[in-house]
Length: 210
Image (cartoon, rainbow, N blue to C red):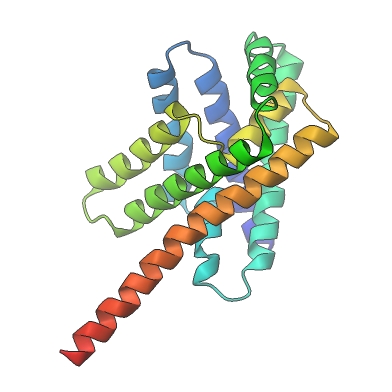
């Protein structure tokens, strides 16, 4: 579990850095491209990011402890980056405060649905990376998954942990919203993983029968 925590901490740091890069530019397309660096480093290095791991709860046994440790490491990693940004008084703080304020104005149902969609995109990005044989395809799967969730304004729980930390947005309301995002990301990722598992089972059954 210690190894999982450290890999999750590393992933949290990378997402925090990716968030800083995204917030530091005005062009959303370029910003989302920069953000993808974080996920590319995570999947290529085998680090533990909640949104990239939660979908596989459908296939794995005794996985709850892994997810709990992953969340803990991700939270700490993004918090550390947020503290650094606030200590350095970077200009992105004001921008992030405005972004978080807008996010917290959304209704919880909308946040849940946006989180489900984001969870699905993250699963597709990670699963695409795992299945692709060409290195270029691996990179494109991750890159487009990230760009789609950012440009579509889907809710990524770990990215939002970073935004909260940078903005210093700690309240009961922000905690509730984060919990909804965590649940939504899980539902989206596990839903698609379950579909993949079912299709694989049906294909195997068909192959045996034929």
